[in-house]
Length: 316
Image 1: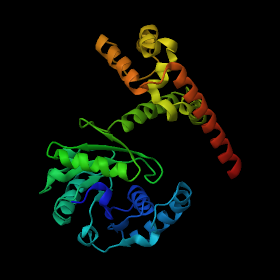
Image 2: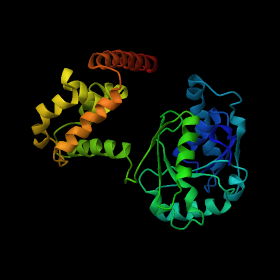
Image 3: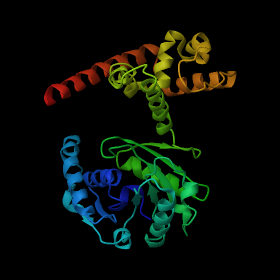
Image 4: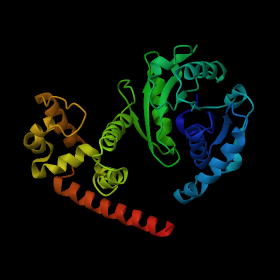
């Protein structure tokens, strides 16, 4: 196995929206990409997807040697993984399909090569059951489109070896991703569970006639959504406590957790949960004071607003 920064060839198995996005990302990073998808028109669809993504990738900055000509679409899975130093699987979210496909990839891929699944919900423990070499199978969960959204959540299964999780995390960082290496398997992972909670509440409001789709979208794009790219929900509430930070926010607003605002049951605000939130915010803030964080947030929100406004003016 090469080190993550020595990889030159990757295989992408499955070339739909997510798999094709991975192909575009890897090509832009200068890799040779070997792809396979069972659909009869896979090569044509993949070519269109990469072509559509290339202007944005070019604007972001292509790696030395990056070229769409580095893509090869192979007729079989075995040929696609031949010579690959990393494999990204992006099949549909069907557990039986995932199990069989990952087993087939593990049987065909070179020994020791890490195989990552783009699954958005299944744990690796339930997907690696049929693989002969499950120790090298990990979850590498991206967000759509993978060539633009930096986050990847990495997790192993009960039969995954620690070295594979570590290698995959280092590889994704090497190719420009922001990586969350999860300590435990969690259905839906972290980001999906957060956006699912918001999505579920939105559906409730529309179903009950409490808000329109446009009102809901505006509430996020022109409200908390402007703050989240800067600090995320936890540090955002840390600032809501003023100089007292998260500790003051929880002590002051803690009782409102029981207010029937949402259809999700609030957790009990125990002393341990309170302290974990306070300690987590202090750790994330590091040496930045409340004033520093406020200034950082304000600068970023202004930049985001200007960028979104400019983008709308360009397309109008």
